[in-house]
Image 1 (spheres, rainbow, N blue to C red):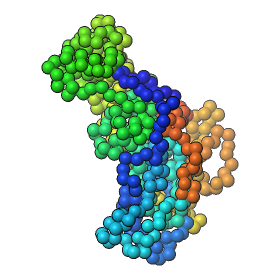
Image 2: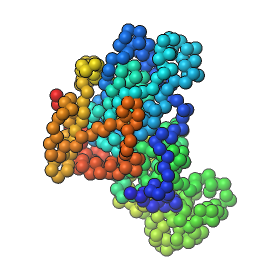
Image 3: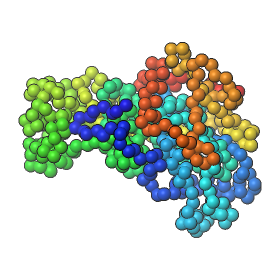
Image 4: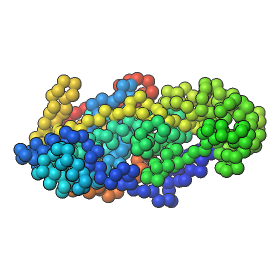
Length: 452
């Protein structure tokens, strides 16, 4: 599905143009040092005592959803699989580990040949998850799997948090398009991942050019207040922008006086002006006043874009306002108050034997599990089932959730594209009970049940 047309933006469709693979990254070629020191000290000890080669199962899951959230959105899997492929130790990295006494010589020799050779299953991107959902399952020797812990969690915790918040904003915006513009509010690399996650969640595009190059996210942008301030007056600034970008551009009208800015914008561009943007003030009131003024000036088709510290609650409050699109930044890239998804990566099985962590408030359910979502005949989801028996017989309305992602260390062919994952999320959100889409605080939209 092509993204909706946005004010002042020439949105390039995904269909019909090359989109780089998920393996495109913006970091160093090797991802092996994107990890915690203790992963390698555990490896050293396990190699010494002979337990390193025991076959293990690790699961990545969230014990609970962020306070008040009804569902989570899986995102980042494509980035993670590319990062796992690039998880190797080159000579310079091994020299760094040796010089700093991180690992001994036998461990360095083992790391020199490291390539992940196990299996990975997981929820596809764009799938919903709930407390306990095995979003990712890694099956390999302890040595192969344990060193991936930090990488798995850093990618999933960030991207799932952003996508979950962005999906709530898309729901609040209804049919109005959203533009992700939070690059300047986060780390430069996190900004690219956030733009990808927001697009997956239903945002129409992003201001981030690296996200466009790496992941095919539609990019757009016009001008900031600095451009207006650069010129002697708004007339000169708007005239310059229209001359460069055309009548369908979006003029930022709140640098000085908004009413005068709108009058100047229409006088310069005429009634065919594409859009105006308002970035401050009481946005609901200003949008209504702007619509009245634009109509009086004959610019009845000129669209109104609002931005300025918008989150899902602010967007929902603007539902009755005459708004055509939103720009959201800080709230998107910070997960709208929940900057991490709370994912953990836990060992649940060793050599076919379930293992259980019994720590208070941090207990785990042992054993390799697969997941099924149960639905009513109407298609409404009612339960998330976690089952140990892989031969579990499906009932009408049951949908298996995990899919093969990696086999023998190689990514499985035919995994969903970013565009397909985006479409899948739109479909599964419709399956939630209507209470599950509310922004108000409440329990997860459906319960999670463990079956032996």
